[in-house]
Structures are given as structure tokens and as C-alpha cells.
Length: 329
Length: 135
Image 1 (tube, rainbow over the protein chains, first blue to last red):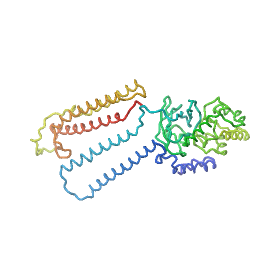
Image 2 (cartoon, helix red, strand yellow; image 1 turned 180 degrees about the vertical axis):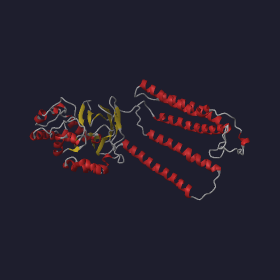
Image 3 (cartoon, chains in turn purple, red; image 1 turned 60 degrees about the horizontal axis):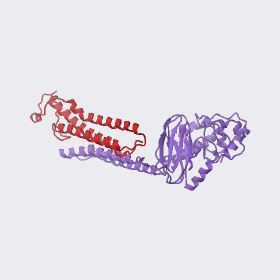
Image 4 (cartoon, each protein chain N blue to C red; image 1 turned 90 degrees about the vertical axis):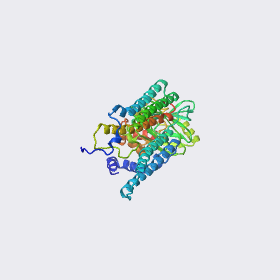
């Protein structure tokens, strides 16, 4: 904790006050907890965890009890036959059968891919340093691009097709299920079925560079109807006015805002930027002040990010860009 | 080394020679079984593709496991004859560095390795029963 404080003290006071409570809160909130499952796979994994923990505790107690008994207990002669059997059952048979049972229990949790039905929803995920490029597959097969925020309908089986453009990342929503690596040149499939509505947090679970810890994303699980409304809205082009400053500053070289600028695709799609909760892949809450900070010094907030600083822009122009971005609902 | 004779030396005539091959026979069977299962599985899946079912490899692996267990069983049977069945009793005379004692000790090790190898072969086989496709 002290180290985290010192680290943050180097940044602006406003940033510190914005980030620190979030870090502290994240430690106790169930939104990123595998022990508060909100999906089919996560429930199985939580059960496995509790089974292993309790089973391990029981075995530990028995062995410690036996050790204490051996040291402290009264010395009574035992027959050789008893000793033989004790060593055989306690030292050979029990570990062998116990480990085999654990192996079977773990293997039974593997998903069965044979003849699996088509998923209810397909989402393509491209992990990049240090953000998530997402594309939802609409009902007519059209790809709906978005970034850094996953929305899912409750009760539906969603298939994520994961890949990466630079290094190995890992896509993990602890509340919904296990993690899966995103590997350059390969597509891995991960199926998740959320069972509870709510807001969760997903993370990159494979160290991928300086801002690995800032490569997160909020996950919203909605009612099916609400999800359909959200997806339909994401499909629309941007409706905001006042894009002049955004275009003049060259933002379009890296960011797509459908209907305004569709040339560059280095950074996240910003078409419905203001509908999201966070800036910089789960790094900061989306507020006017944070957005202004981000434009001034992105690498200060998120080391290693490829976005350049726009501190040299006149304040009026930067404000105009912020106004425009916040209108991209 | 003391020259004190073992109290039951006469009863302990079990033959001479330290046949190292017999000691490592079971682990060798396990290693070959392990290699065969993984190499066969990898080659099969490389040819058949990610979505291919694993029915044929499952049968092949089960047959290979039965063969491996039979070989290990054979080895166990030979060694079983050498020594008494106890795990803990004092049937070693540690002070005696005679060919006979070495033979006895190595037979004991070999028997333990047989059991371990059999368990290892079964553990290699179990995952195959739970995998349904090459994915």
C-alpha cells in the first residue's frame, strides 16, 4: 500500500484522489471475484475451489494430527501387520486414489466441444497493447465494432474468438468463467454463459508490457431486450456534431468514428465513446476532467500507450475535442 | 563393515546378480507408453484437424495402456517371487554388502517402481477418457 501511494504521489493530486479509492474498492468488491460467480463456468470453478480448499484442509488436519499423535501420544507396540497396512493405505493407496479422483473431477469440468450447438452470440476480441478491440457479430452477420467494454445478454452462450496482434495476452472475466490466452497468429475460442445481471470487471491475465495492469474492461450483463437495444445503438454511426476540432487535430489518423472519420484503426473505435464507463481500457472513469488529463498526458496515466500527447493544442481546441467526444453517446 | 553374520542368512538364498534391466523395465514401459500416447495423439490431431473427434485415438490409447499394464504385471510377477511381501519389516541386512543383499535391495526397488509405473500409466490414460475432440 505504501509503495502504491508513493508511486501515485508523483502524479497529479487529482489523479491520486481519483485512482486510489478505486484500487482500494476493487480489492473488496465482488465485481472481479472468482468467488462470487455470475456465470455457469465460474460457478463450476468456484465449486472446484471450495472442494479443493476444504479437502486440502481436511487432509492437512489428519496428517498434522497423526504427526502430533506420533510425537506426543502414548507409546504402544503395534503389530507389524498393522504398520504394513497403515503405510500401504495411508501412504500409497489414499494419495493414489485421491489424486486420481481430483484428476477425474478436474477433467470432468473441461468443456465438451463435440457437436456443440452454435453459440447465441459471437464476439471477436483482438488484444493489443494495452486495450481490447471488440467486434460483435450482428444477427445478419454484420460486424459491429467497439472497444474496451463488453456487454452480454444474461443466460446466453457467448463465444469469444480471441487473438492478438503483438504479444500474448489473456482474456479473463473472473465472475463469469476461466481465462483464455490471446495468442498472435492463432484464434482461441472461449464460451461463457452469464447467469446474473450486473456489472463485472475483466482483465488481461498474462503480463503483456508496462501497462498490463491497466488493460481492463467493464463487463455489463443485461436483460436480453436491453442488450438488443444496446447492440442496435452501437450499430448506428455517430450522430454528434462539432467534429471539426477532432478532425483538424488528426485524431482520425488512429481512431474510427463511424460517420465522421473512418481512415485509421490504430486505436480504439470511438463511435459511441461516451456510452462507455471508462477511458484507457478501464483505467479512468469517464469524466470531463479525466478526459482532459488523458488528452494532455496519456503516457503519464498509462505508460507505454501509443497515443501521443495533445498538450500543445490550444485549450479551446482541446475543449472542443472533449465536447465532441462526450457527445458520442 | 562388521563381519557379524546375518541371523537368517540361510533362509535368504534368493539368487545372485543385480539385473539392472529388471529394475528399470517397468519405468521403461511407462516411458514408451507415455511417448506413444502423446506422439500418436499429436500426429492424429495434426492430420485430422481441430474439430476431429477422438474416438479412434481413445481406443488405441486404451489398448496401449492394457499392453503396458500387462508388461508391467509380468515384470512385477517375476520380482514378487524374490522377496517377501512386507513393506516395512526388516528383511534387509544393511550391514551386509553382499551380492545377495544387493539383489534383494534392487528387487525391492524394482517392485516399488512397478507399482509406480502402473499408477503412472493409468494416470496418463485417464485424461484420454475425458477428451472428446482434438481441441
